[in-house]
Length: 93
Image 1 (tube, rainbow, N blue to C red):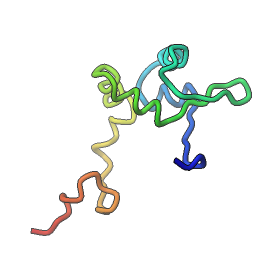
Image 2: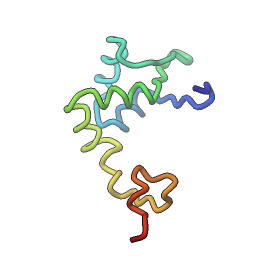
Image 3: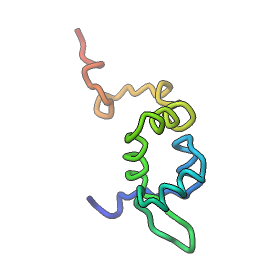
Image 4: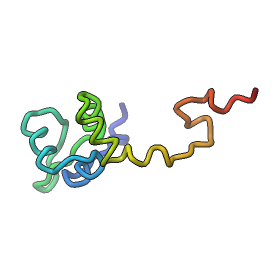
């Protein structure tokens, strides 16, 4: 992995994106369930570790999909098959 490709989020950004409270994010940090760094006294959470956590439990997935970033996925109409999660959708029959 190239270090320049790491995406880091603040506690509030992570909470908003994944539909959970800031308290939940801080609890995950305390329990060492997320990878993070401290920059100028603030936590910067590794997006990848937050995404992996959101896939670990049914409750986390539901919150992400209902209140977080997942609520917008249906609106993303990906037309370029190179970036589609399912290129077969674009095959001509």
